[in-house]
Amino acid sequence: MDKKSANFENKFITTCPSCGQNSFLIFQKIDKIPYFGEVLETFCSCSKCLYKTSDILTLSKKKPLKKTILVNEKSLWFRVIKSKYCVIEFPELGIKIEPGPNSEGYITNVEGLIDRVITFIKSLNVILPNKKEEVSKLLNNLEKLKKGELVVHLKIEDETGQSAIIKRVKQEK
Ligand SMILES: [Zn+2]
Image (cartoon, rainbow, N blue to C red; front, side):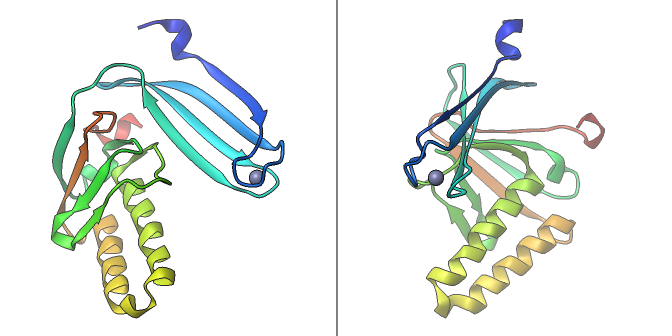
């Protein structure tokens, strides 16, 4: 592990892919994730049109990943590294999110991942107005899951191996 690269940070402004103005801030840093390795995180945001995106890139070669965990009070705290190639599935809830062209990569925990899924499902209300009942049932279950009132499996799959779920205890932070 190279100490210098572990502290790497970079910041620059470039042309925004959304509005075309020279107001797109790109911030990059390298994070060292225990039991996983170094990850280059990129956060981008435009000060003019407010377009925002993020991505991650693992800096070592990884094997394809297929992992299933039980989501309960303890595992809500597990760290999740989600690349833009990651497939997220809650089989019991009938939720499967496949990567699309606007997929983002980020580092969070299981609870944070559920929050992202909630935001995504909420957006379905706009595209699928006739599915309101199904959508609200899903949201209800996801909220219960976050509170530990529901226990289901979470499956993540990543052919590039750039995603992971890493066990940890709450105190570690
Ligand atoms: Zn913009």
